[in-house]
Length: 87
Image (tube, rainbow, N blue to C red):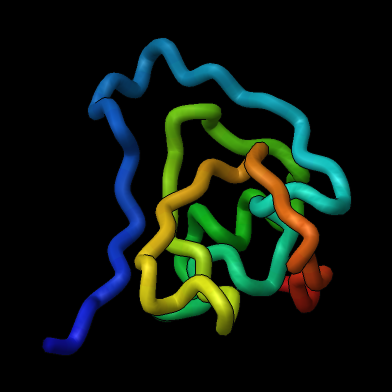
């Protein structure tokens, strides 16, 4: 069975967006964050602005975790961090 990664928020509310700063070592700035699908405006914005909605989640594409289809927030982190390429 082939898995298709999807970018999706946990909530559809747009008026109460809680943006948080993202720093090196966190998933939002990792090259594996959302790498299983085409880049989109949300991912580019996270990397360029270094901030993200705290309820936004995407799949981690780290090779050792791909089979788990792990979903993470941009503020999550792990020892497998690799810097994202410039947007």
